[in-house]
Length: 290
Picture 1 (spheres, rainbow, N blue to C red):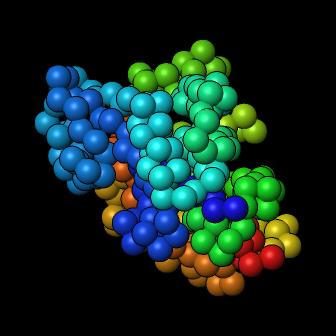
Picture 2: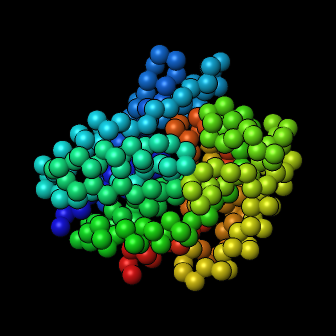
């Protein structure tokens, strides 16, 4: 059984990672007025943030279409793949997953396995890398999906946004929450809940206070892991803060794998510039070797 893996550009896999594990990455569309850009193809994270700073009307995004998915299915089928695992943005922040589940019932040339990541960015990437590595080693969907579920269940994430206005405007977090109140002048800490929705977790007045809260959460959580831990620090054009957070996290958790990444256009549309995130979970490479 030859198994393929598809993800979307919100995973922010590098070209080298995608090529190494034969992962198909389909671009999300970023829209500035009448102009449309394929993420990672027509516009980079740096270019996006430059445009974002120069525009009055905030951009929007359009998810990968079923037409794009079918084109990918056709190419994979022609290349000899018999099944494909699709790991995309959380169903809690987009309807893509439920649309794919419905669409996949009518796909005849390849067996489609939609998998709800319930996460975004590097969490989505880790799931895709796990699936890709196992697939290149000859594993099939029946073997890969239980590992994906194990990794997904282990994921913890704290996201600190500099200004919650973007998330409120794009509807990725509800403005009806009593937690929100007058939050535009504070640093809210958010997370993904069990359903993959973005929910408030805590609030602090400064980014340093927010980081101390995140670090305390990690210190309470990570000792409970019985597996190797991988920690990822991500930012939306906040390199100095990322360097500071990374150094502190490496010092606090010397036995964990610590890596960094960048939040790209399709996510920073919602988080705004200067957002910071930390994700920790069972090391996907460890799971791939069980």
